[in-house]
Amino acid sequence: MEITICFEKLATSGTINLDGREWKAAVGWMSSQAYRNCSAEDENQLVEDFLAPAEVERYRSFHRNGRRQQELLRTRILAKRVIRGYLASNRGYNLKHDQDIVVLHVEQGERQGMPYVSVGGNGVEDLSVSLTHCSSMLGAAVGDGCLIGIDVEEVRSTEASFLELFLDHEEIEFMQGSFQRLDLNQKGTLMWCAKEAVGKALGTGFFHGFSAIRFRSGDKVGMIELKLHAELEKYIPTCDTQSRIYYDFHDGVCYVACIFGLIG
Image (cartoon, rainbow, N blue to C red; front, side, top):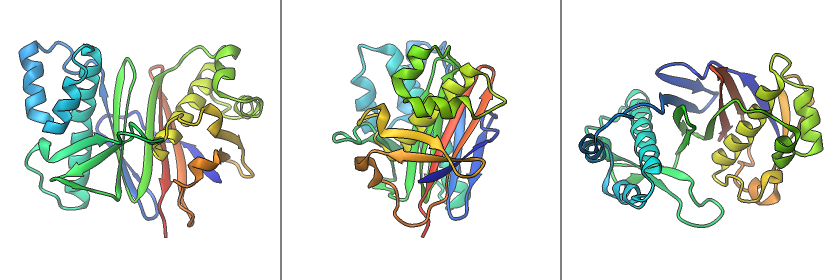
C-alpha cells in the first residue's frame, strides 16, 4: 500500500490535533523530567490521583524497576490528559476523574503489549491509543476512526552496522535518496521511528521482525510504498484508506506519528 509521508510541526507544546477526512487524532508530549524530583510520598499521591486499580496493579508489578514505574505513571498521566481533552472537545464527555480513563494492554498474542483505552468501565473500540518515551520526552496519542502509532527518539549516530540491523538494502537506498533537508543521522533515526510508529499503529510492534515492515520509493512525490508481512495485512482496513506518516525534529529529537485511516 502507498502511504503519504510529510513534515508536520509535531514538537509543539500542548495537544496537536491531526484531522483527516473522516478521522481525528490528537498527540501530546511531556518532558521526561516532569515530576522527576517527586518524593516517595508525592509519587504515591500521583498514583492515587491518576491511576485506576488495574493500572496500579501493573505499576506495582514493576516494583523492582523504579524507572519503569515512573515511565508508566507519567505516560498514563499524559495519555489521560490527551484522551480526556479529546473526548471533552469532540464527544462532549464530562469525565470528572482521571481514573475513569483506564489505559490497559493486550496480554497475549502478536499484539501483546498494545495499549487500549477503557472509559467509564467500557472499552471504546473506535478509539486507538499509543504511548512512547525516550530519555528526554514522553508522548501519548489518541486516534478516533483511525489506528495511530507514535514514536520519539533522540537523533542517534547511524553507522552502517546500525542501519543494517533494521533496514534492508532497498530501504537504505530509499533513505539515502529521500528527505534531502535531513542529515544522515536524522534520516536513520527517522526510518527507525517510522517503523516503530507503523508497528505501534498495527499493535504488533516488531513481533514478526524488522523485515515485516518495509519501505520502498513511491510512485509520487511525498508517497512511499509500505510493504507488510502477510500476517500484518489483516490489521489494515481493506477499504479505501487515508494514511499518513508525520515527522518532525526539534532539539535533537525525532517525533513521528503514523495514522491508518479507517474510512468507508
